[in-house]
Length: 116
Image 1 (spheres, rainbow, N blue to C red):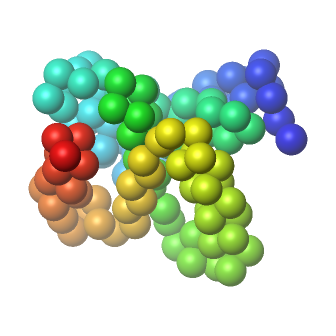
Image 2 (image 1 turned 90 degrees about the horizontal axis):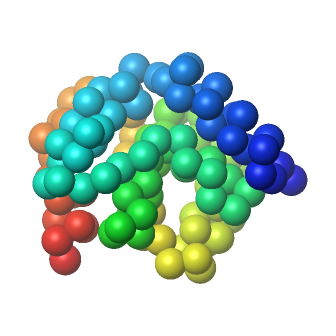
Image 3 (image 1 turned 90 degrees about the vertical axis):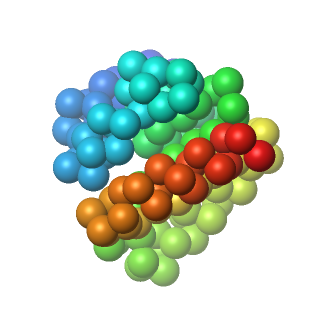
């Protein structure tokens, strides 16, 4: 299990090595562009690092590539999501190809969740 300083180091590395899909979504979420809300990327929570987090709305956004369809990764994702939900977060998951084919739809789902 990773903690504290290790997770901060991993977060910094992940921010530097963002995927094209993370960079695409980050364009819309950064600098309070999305309805004035503050999002952060690669945020340590517990022993996990989440892709995007809006602490004010307790919302986490995870982007998944093809490897997330493997059973071992699916099980780890379920465990991770359960931990996050048990700590008061709502988790939205999107496939990378959702961002390629329907970024407006992804942003609308995020907006609807925020303004429930």
